[in-house]
Amino acid sequence: MVVAIPKILVVGLGNLPFPVTRHSVGQRIVDSLASRLGIHMSSDRGGYSGQRDVMLGDILVSLTLFKSKSLMNISGPSIAAAYRKSVASPTALIVLSDSLSHKPQTLSVRLGGSANGHNGVKSIISALGGEMGFYRFRVGIGRDETDAATYVMRNLSAHERRFWDDQGLDLVLKEVEKVALNHSQGGWPV
Image (cartoon, rainbow, N blue to C red; front, side, top):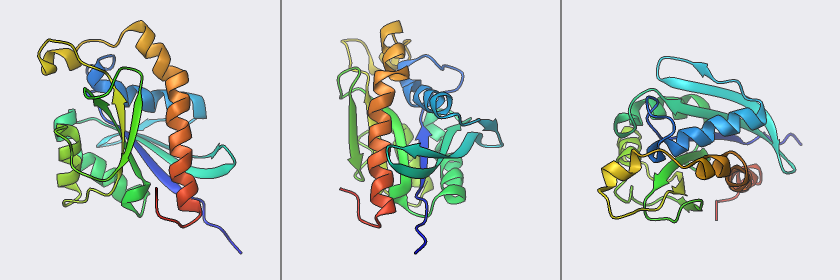
């Protein structure tokens, strides 16, 4: 019996011109994944992408990483194009985005649901024709008393950057492994 290798697409939301801001933490994590897993990222028309078969835990996964060249709030069309090229199911799409609603250095995983006010996620849902059945990996950035737009455009602290390059990246990889395991077993995500 031949078992298909699960194909997973991980997209990092952010704004390429502002790579160290809280708003771009999703793209930073994609860069860290690429570095750790030895995935070469190449530029194409819509963004930067890379693909490689990698071992996550005990499972072989065809992993594609993507960062849009478009600003986050209009990145949906390029992400939808990457999705259509690389995976066959919405549950094989993982979107890494910043979350003001979660404490810094936390990761909250959710399958489906609304955009919860996140304009980058809204853009993806729209570009996918209303499809909402993909994973959101919400990366906690916290919040202070300042205006949200000002807060998200501030730089991540050195401590936060180190966290998402190391321990936080371990959290992300563990969750990606769970998604891949589900796909390899042909089951529905939990």
